[in-house]
Length: 445
Image 1: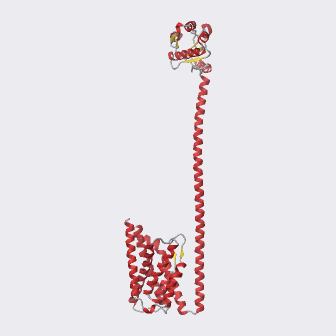
Image 2: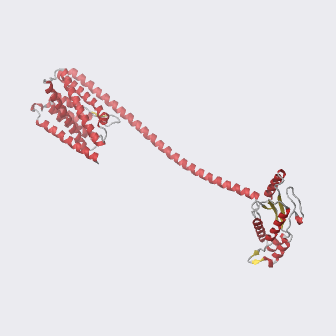
Image 3: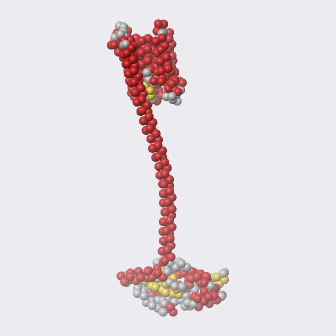
């Protein structure tokens, strides 16, 4: 906010000084200077010069004939008339550029016109100071004097306009004054020098050349201007093509980026589904492995797992005889009576309860397996003698002989009790009918 306020105050000061310069010039205009020639110059500045302005590609600068018109007016009609022409030409030129979108705001139009008149007034003052210092009249009939006068005007106008513009940019952006002057204003010296040279050529042609030379010179200047204008147009066209190509490239990249994001999202979804499928597959594998090694009804180890464990223990026993183990084979005799009297559902329940009781009475290192319909096998580890295995068998018998309730009643009062009694008396270790059989690595029980 402070920067904008300072810039606005500076603009107001420049406008005030510029209008003051114009007013002073109007008061001091020589009456003999207002002729047809001067009016022709003013008409050219208003109607023709703005349309000859060229914009430099990719910049905020313009190439115009303002300096040439101002310098020409200065050496022909005097400083006061040049101040008026500077204000009028810059004002109309800024209005023309505003219609084309080059300048925004009426305040800037008045500011630029006032700045041009003020800069011309400063250059005129320095010229008068130079004349007073050298104490002689610089007649323009001499080419040397013409170059000196135009050089003083060009240099004075350049430094005055560049310094005032740099101060404005300094107030607006808070950048370094020196850096701003080098970056934004130094290049404008070419416009003042070129304008002074063109004004000198036109002055010489009008005053000292014949019509043929003037015509040839004007044709040359016109061709030079048209060639430069065409070059500027081609540069602008090339820049527009490049910008269009960049826009298309940006659009293509944006489309590709969107497609890449969609592909990434789809890939993420696919990977998520694949990960879920892998988890489900691993779970299925674990389930299959568990089903392959365990009984589906009781959850105990099945015949295959029992055989694998038994073979491994036998192999370890062959290597280390101290690694003894005991194997109990048992079944429920007359288990068929339970299925026949109470049904297979109750029979399965009896097997499940028996399996749970087996697990409760054994250690975690022991193994219980269901190897047949009502046939079970137990591997006891860490028992050093057969007597300890016999104690385990007796404890097992007491656990299994506990009554089993069915439908809220004690089965001991029905045929179920008889069936269990008939079966429980037949618990045996070893093979069918309780016949002991010695297995390598074990002791008979």
